[in-house]
Picture (cartoon, rainbow, N blue to C red):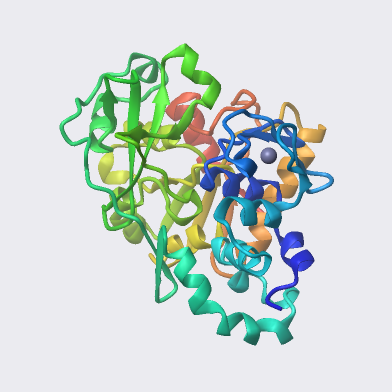
Length: 357
Ligand SMILES: [Zn+2]
């Protein structure tokens, strides 16, 4: 019935699990080989649900949940039957497009007949039309919130002009910066907040904003931060630069101005097939990957992990466009830095010497 559970599981990597947890509101924290998240398995608030990458299993250290895999978790959280949970995961990551060979072909038909039923569940937050995911659109409740000057961001090279251009706001109630996320047509699809209040840091630095009992979250894998502002430049230059965080987009804008921005953020550290297609559909010839430097030195274990991850991206998309990497083999960046964190000169050097496999 439907997709084979183990085949689908094989297609999911650590990042994918992170993404789906983020989408489910579990506030996952990455600890390298395991994730710590909220006990959404039984509707709890404590961060005692662990995901172990090696076993690909969750364990809930409160309640009676015990150990379970990603599909059982989706069953519990979304109140789905197992087959529907598998379909949910498949559609979340567009896996039926991603790698049809790996999925048991003979079972496809059964899956398609169930599509309408599954789609209804899915449409609670997402509407699908012509293979395009329509995200839930929120009212722009923050348009009267002030545009702040953020001192700590200014020190990191982010100008107020860039913040204003991206419509960054300040929420005096929670003392946080509000980062609105728009889809490619400039509809508001989510708001993330970065708190500067210490006690709230435990929830993770960035999280969906909550206001009047509504959480302004969105599935991050189905959008690119900054695309609506950058899409015309990307079309003109036939090139896009993909970074991890919103802040990197703001730095790029601060260095090069809004007329030159071709930089968008995945808001994670992987590029989904859906995000890739958003850029491909703009007619890009080259995709530049500018992810954070998640290694200390060349040859280290971390380095091997990063290398594997980047090669995966290259393998997935190399047949569609040219892929290059802002890869710091020159020691210009510190560990965990984005390629934009050490200022425009370092970025320019990395860009001009970008790695082509
Ligand atoms: Zn539990």
